[in-house]
Length: 128
Image (cartoon, rainbow, N blue to C red):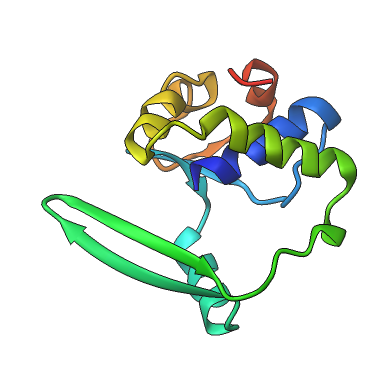
């Protein structure tokens, strides 16, 4: 969810438009798409992904696997570059590290819990 946030906000930072159009909310572990549970459930019911849940102590690990091949024709060249930039930037981060990194973003720090994070904060995003 955090990588989606970074891809959308980075695209907004560069092009004044998010890729998905999804609003993001501030939750305790970082920014996530608004109504993310409904979004994931809908995508799963349409047989586009498979979701497995694993519970370890107080953590819930959600493993999402695509059931369809990636269709790069749905993205512009610039969007593909942004997806690659986000992937490359966070390739050595685990989910906890990405969460901690997202907590340093102005959008997360300056938004109340469970409120929508304004895309205006894309300007101060810590990745380029």
